[in-house]
Image 1 (cartoon, rainbow, N blue to C red):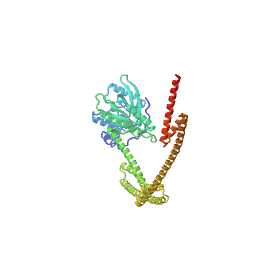
Image 2 (image 1 turned 45 degrees about the vertical axis):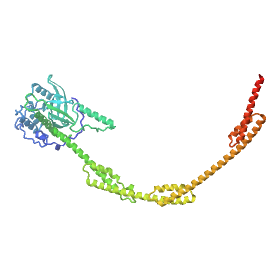
Image 3 (image 1 turned 45 degrees about the horizontal axis):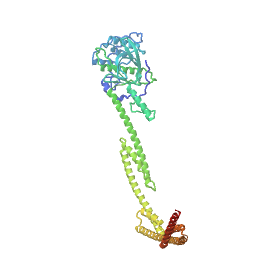
Image 4 (image 1 turned 120 degrees about the vertical axis):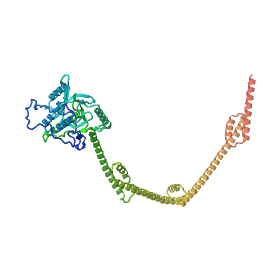
Length: 532
């Protein structure tokens, strides 16, 4: 048989969480179940037959039972009242008397003798629901400390394999609409697609968060995490229904686990027999557990929020006692986040929240008043300083006739609040007066500079005119004598650039140049004629 999956440490559900529905089905292990007197108990004087080779007494013929519901109830009662393993085996003999087929009887006998743990108390034909939700025909063999899921081939009459599950690994038994679901400490067989997806989801969460914690959005491993479901395979013409066979199987597993626990030494590892539940009870347990966890989270958050708010109230209250106190020392902001957190917390102390809100409102009002007073004080200080500076600047500007410092002081006084309008007007008038004086002086200096430059230019023009006139007169006299206008050209150009040269002189020079040009042309023409 393959080794069982590693056990998972889980806490069994408290017995108080199970309501009376299982008791109404007369299943052992349910709260409120009262075991009746054992109707199948053998008489005290009955002789005990010798033990068989397998270590177990030979089984006498079972007492016939009535069919239907009374038969299942009497069998469940007989199982629940068994005080020893032998008495339980005697009660379970009735299962063998059900109208099994010959192949089923042979398979049950073969499986009971095949399992390594003896004696075998009973065997049940079931359909095991595997990880793919497929039904697999199996034989459940119950022994004093374990149960075996055996695969038996009716055609060959051989046992192919089996899987052993110790009863101490069974956490609870759930009666479903179709059969019995057994919850275990570890995985029974292979994990199905649902668990593969949960592992993949956990791995993706670890990679995305960079953490090795098993925190993910999938299902938490509790006592209902690992399960294997079995559905009864009824024999042809069985007197009991599938629901009644499920009751018998659940009662047998619970009672066997209970007797196994009682047989263990006192100093051994203790375990509790698995309780018998219904699907609604299991859902109610999980619902109550989530509600309890949510209530615990709310309690922890409520206590943390109240503690944080109390600390914030102390800090805020201490800020009111500081002397001297400024607006920055009035700490009302420290209450904002704790108040919001306390409001979100469930059933937080309303009086504490109200007191904190009232303190916050008082501190905010004190802060507003303090800020206003500080603003007025800053304005008064700035007004007095600006006034003093402006008065000093006016005195200095009146003496120095310099408005530089006065302009700076006037700007500061305008920014200040409630500075004397008379002082501001006096400063503005003095500044305008000084600026007018400075402007008039600047204009006079500019006019004088312009007059000086004009006189210098006129002097330069006169000197150049006199020189150009003298040069042109000399050139005219030389050209009239030599009949050559070489010197006349340069003098004429200078005279044209000069300002105010005599127009009569310029005309005389131009006429002389024209006359000399004409003489030269006539001389050249005469020379050409003579050459011919």
